[in-house]
Every structure is written in C-alpha cells, then in structure tokens.
Amino acid sequence: VADIAVNGHIISGGTAPTVSVGTATGAGDGTNSATDPTVSVDGTDVSGTLNITSGEQKVVTGVLAHINFSQKFTTGYHVVVSPSNDPAGNLRVFIAKTAAGFDLVTKDAPATATHYTFEYIVIGADGQQPAPALP
Image 1 (cartoon, rainbow, N blue to C red):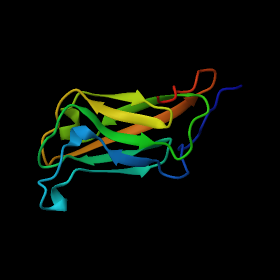
Image 2 (image 1 turned 180 degrees about the vertical axis):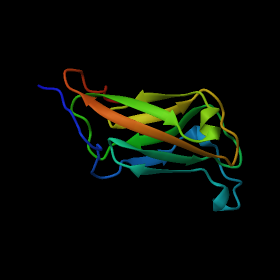
Image 3 (image 1 turned 135 degrees about the vertical axis):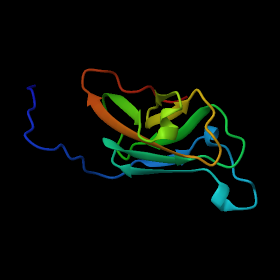
C-alpha cells in the first residue's frame, strides 16, 4: 500500500521453477542423446535465465519451453522475457501464461543444434485475476 524505494540490489530467493522441453525444440537424431533438445533454468520464480538447445532435427514453430513455478502466484502476474544471445534475438517469441507458470513460444522455427538464452522476470499483480486454469 506504498511505494518501494531500494537503495541497492533486488535479490530474489527461493526454489527454481521446473522446466521442460517444448515441441518446437525438435528432436535428436535417435542414436545419440547428445543431439536431443535440452532446457534448463538458472534462477527463481521471480527472475532467471532460460537455456534452450534445439535438437538435431524436426524443429518447428510453437512452444520452446514450459516453465512451472515452484510456488503458484495467487494473483495475476506479468512476465517479461528478453533474448540474451544472438540466436535468441533472431526468434520472434512471446509468452503464454498458464495456471502454473508460462510457456515460451516462438513464431519462427529455431535452427537445429543451436543454443538460445533468454532472461525473464515475473512480478505478481495484486488486484488482477489469477491465470486461467488449464482445461
């Protein structure tokens, strides 16, 4: 019910969200798991870095990664995602909120066997409705 002034850094703590590979990241070559797509997160529900490596084949448009918060927001929330390496800057991406987190979605098929890095920040917004429940 008041403004916040911080004379220093804002540091988020807590458990990292869980992440899983989306279908847009493609598939491996079927013989070597090192060619499979991967996704990882370094951060918390509030902020972090998403690391996505596409597979060797069958990349498409759609969900790159599913991010599920370790603790769901009880209010609405806002997500800002920004590319943080050159390959990520070449993709047109947007987020799709879910009841448990958000999906990072691309309108462009990623290149095969390429590493993409995105930064994210999430802020709860009291007075808004929670994200809709998934069917």
